Every structure is written in C-alpha cells, then in structure tokens.
Amino acid sequence: MAVDLLLGLQWGDEGKGKIVDVLTKNYDIIARFQGGPNAGHTLEFDGIKHVLHTIPSGIFHDNAVNLVGNGVVIDPVIFKKELDNLAKFNRDFTKNLLISRKAHLILPTHRLLDAASEASKGKAKIGSTLKGIGPTYMDKTGRNGIRVGDLELSNWQEKYRNLANKHEAMIDFYDVDLQYNLAELEADFFEAIEVLKSLQFIDSEEYLHQAQKNNKTVLAEGAQGSLLDIDFGTYPFVTSSNTTAAGACTGLGVAPGAINEVFGIFKAYTTRVGSGPFPTELFDSYGETMGRVGNEFGATTGRPRRCGWLDLVALKYAVQVNGVTQLMMMKGDVLSGFDKLKVCTAYNYKGEKITHLPYNIEAENVTPIYTEMKGWKEDLTKMNNASQLPKALINYIEFLEKELEGPIKIVSVGPDRTQTIHR
Ligand code: IMP
Image (cartoon, rainbow, N blue to C red; front, top):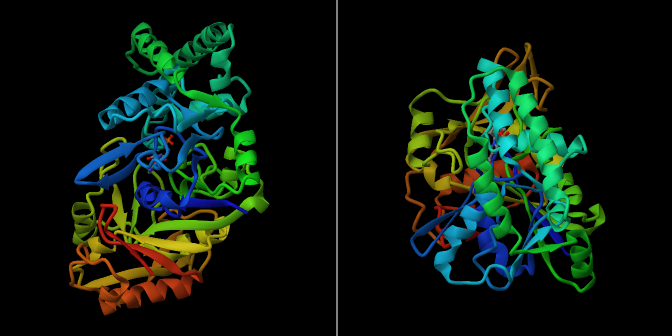
C-alpha cells in the first residue's frame, strides 16, 4: 500500500505544485497521471518562482524519480521549453525524469484544432487554454493518437503525416479565420521530438508495479481540479481527462487497492479560470481583493481568474468523489483583513434548499445560501507553527473540518516552500 494521491478539489489552481514540492522528501517516485501543458504548477523557493506544465513537481529534489504517466498528454515543444528553463540548475534531469511510452503526443495540429473549435463556438466557448488538450484526448479515445512509444518505431512519421493531413481537413471544416504556418510549427515540433527522445521512455505501469513490490513510496500528482473532471465536473466546461482519484488508476496503471492516502487541496476561497458556472462568484470589492492579493492570474495563460467565496457544497462533492483522507487549505493568508467571510453551505435550487451538487449549477438554477463568519486581521505569512494561527482562522478551519468530515492537515500561508504549517 504505497501510493498516495494528491489532487485539487476545486476548479484547479489550488496550489498542488507547491505541496508536491513540500512532500517530495517523503517519496521515492512522483508520478503525474493526467492532463498536459494546460496545467501550470507554480513552486517557489530561495526567492525564485518556477512554473512547471508537464514535468512533475518533485523535479527539484534528488531523492525522487519523476514520472510522466500514460494518462498525460505531452506537447514536445512545451516540454523542451520546460527542460530549457531547468538548464540553469546544472543537473542532469535525464536521470530522474522518466516518460511513459503510453503517454500521447500533442501535435501542432491538435493545438490548431483546439483554436478552431473554440472560435467556432463563439460565446459558448469553453475558455480552453488552447494547448490542444481536447483534440489530443479525442484522438486517444478515437484510437488515432500517436504515443511516445511510437517514436521508437520507424514508421511513426508516416502515421504523423496521415493524422496531420486529416486534422488540416478538419480545421477547414470549422470554417473559421485561423492563420497559421504549419511548416514552421512542424519544424519546432520535430526539433523538440529529438530532445524528448533524449529522455528515458519506459513501460511505466511495470515500473510502478515493481516499485510497489520493492516497497517504494509513490505520490501521484494530479492536475486541474475535480470540478474540471470530464465526468464529474461542470460539463461541458471541463477539461478532457479524469482529474479525480480514479484518474490516477487509469493514468498510471495503479490498482485501486494500492491507494493509501488521498490528499485533497483547496483554497480558502474559490477561483475559476475560463467559462462555466460558478455559483459563489463575486463581482464586488471582496472578489477584487481576493484576485489582487492572491495574484489570481493563470500560470499558463496569464488570464485573470474569477474569484468567489468558498463553496462547501461543491467541495463536499469533490471530497466524496475522491475519497479524500486528508485536506490541505491554501492561501488563508489572502483573506487576512477581510471584516467578514462567507461560506456557502447549501444552494437554493429551483426554490428548494439542497446540500448536494445538482446536475445543473447555472446561475438561473442555483443561488448560494451562506453562513457568515468572522475574519482575521493578522498577517499569516511569517507564521510557521499552528499555535500561532489566529482564533478566527482556527474557527474557520474547524468549521470546514466539521462540514467536510475530514482533518485539515496543512495550512499554507504563502507561496514559498517554507510558508507551510503542518497540524
Ligand atoms: P483545456 O483543458 O485547456 O481544454 O481547458 C478546459 C477548461 O479547463 C478551461 O476552462 C480552462 O481554463 C480550464 N483549465 C485547464 N487546465 C487548467 C488548470 O491547470 N488550472 C485551471 N483551469 C484549467
């Protein structure tokens, strides 16, 4: 029983990267199980901020191997850029970075298809990061995709050409104004493929199986958040993978019985980037303050994130779907100075009070019912011990623990590794 999971319980951007970095010292293997470069995992230490997109967040530690699992989709061009950014560390990452042969590749035309699809949707667009995620997973489930292991075969370029040609025809079908130079995009792509090939490709499910037999500890790292899950999220305004706990089984080849702890991460408030329903969204000075103080801009796209009060109806749903065993609360420091805090504990759903997440949470169906709590004034960012936390924050935490029926074991009080309080 050596696999723990760490995943986001909201709409992504909860701070998973920071916590994976903090926890890596306890693990032999950090394994990313889904998503792709739509993710932006931000880590901060020694005064420097690092943003990772595909590479697991344990990469800065020597004790752990980092694995990109079969459930991940890889854009070689972005992957190469991530490796280039790591070059300043003067370490040979080819030794502790492994790639699953079964991971799928994002082609330049997948990115173009994403853009064409979004443009064709007009106002109904998903608000995709435009990294080609949806079209790549579509080719995966449509059984047309190109996998990392294909790069070891002699005929993969032929397969590539056939698929890219088909994509071009599909782009034409969308009939939108999309300017692109495929030859240029392909030159970057093929150059990046060579860099990718310098890394170790492995049969990752077998590697993890052996690792478990040898009592190695594994932390499975999720991307995005539970409410962006393709099945359980706010469909269609979701990403194209299973971001919830089950995704770790299919995205790594780990059996359900092998999973031990499930760490669920949430912010002390809620954010969302892109389109889709968000019942507790704020359009007032409270929301504006969360965005400004919390520096709520997408790590991948730079887009401002929508902000709102904590939604316990949605959070409880995520705790249940994932079987969370330990909670971690991020960004409590951002709420310092708020005279009051509101927490949504139920919805008014078509005239009826409900406490579960219904099929449809669009604003016309759902109005949040709030419990109001006292805020705290103290600056939390210099605190390093649970005994220093202000009384009002402890009340907030204990209220959430009771509602969510689980312990909050980590309270993060700033972006740096060191600003992490264990309870
Ligand atoms: P896609 O996965 O890029 O197609 O985007 C689909 C939806 O998920 C959009 O609303 C994105 O803003 C959102 N999304 C994708 N990745 C992330 C993430 O890492 N953090 C937050 N939102 C994300």
